[in-house]
View (cartoon, rainbow, N blue to C red):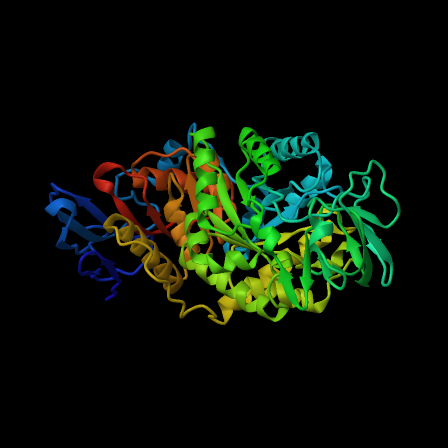
Length: 613
């Protein structure tokens, strides 16, 4: 006798059991289902009699009264049913043969999924799919259509546009090229726009992608507006720069990639000597330190979102980008204000707002910022210029953990494979760094200069992909996260039900070693809850909205599909099985767990364990 236990936390625990001879899911085309209904008027469903070749299916129904708002008492009914269908070749429980079901459900239906993911599923199966998502910053090295397609083929899930660089026309062309790849070649690459922010920046280098600063060289940092830059001269965007710095101050460029010492001040010009050589990038962030402490009073007076940023944000809204990342976020109010602005400008849009955690102020208000954001980015380069270097690893871990607890996707960025800007292979320390971010279960990893201006962008992406796959496999084999415990997200009953259904579905999937979890969702909420659980198997997220599908592209373990579906779970499953089998992504006998939040009747949410017919 087999038994499946599950608990749904309402006002009290509800223990659900499935009993019956051969009630497991291992043999034949077995199906187990758990559903939760909330409503005022509920009728107990009729019990089922004999099913499937004389085997008995036993139905247990537990009724619990749950207090609702304003003293209303609602019945919450938890149903567990098991129906074991007859052996292969017989009619299913609905009296229609599997072949005829496929024909009926497959006609006139279409399903959209990323072409690379589809090819991987066909060739290597479910367990081969990568769970960690990959983001590539697009720049001169990767902006041509053929270069973008190479990145898409290599596993790029999101293309990032850094608004510090490039013209409006250039950004527009990149967006159009990415969308053309998606529509014509079947890829599903989302687009993220990253704002420049109001911190102190260096200027451009007369069109050069980078300039090398050598040890001991003397450079001029000026606030003058120059049409032509003299050799070893750069413009600073902050007019009070020459007044604020003092002789002996240390200038830190791009989070420590290059360092200078201030040796002389002449009017609007500041003469500096290079003490740590390296590459200077256009519009790189600039901080200055005095006696080992960050001088940040002036930066604190600058707005988080500059006038240029607002123009860029309007551009991003008009172009319908999928995500906007805001630089140097200090408080949650900035994120709230921006989200209200986006909603007013694009009421029907679905743009996710990510907070970049890259300043000491961000850390002081970390939980409040992440809670109101749609996701977070650990921008380690600039963050490492504002806190002691030895604190960066522990801060990264804390941000990743907190983001997961709050059900917000988190990106680990900056200097993952920095050496591959110039060399075809990474350092072993860089590989270890990438592996650690994957082990921490960050949703996504991001390439910056490696893909924007590096000599080997395809190889850098390949390293991220192969290291992610190997580390994910190692974590599953060694049960590294079997003891993970996540705090409850919400105190609202309906949300708690969704959360507990997803937690239970992930646990069932791991224990039964199913091939995949299916989730049918219109807003993406239950898909994100499943991603938060980090199950061992991939999550097939079916949604009928293109914008939701694109946003799910960034979350750990999700394979987003766009599929037209109805409110009937059974018909959706039959149609999905037929389409996936027809395209070679699943085969007869595969085992899946399915959950759904798409039914409007009685707010039905359910779990089913199904074997593909």
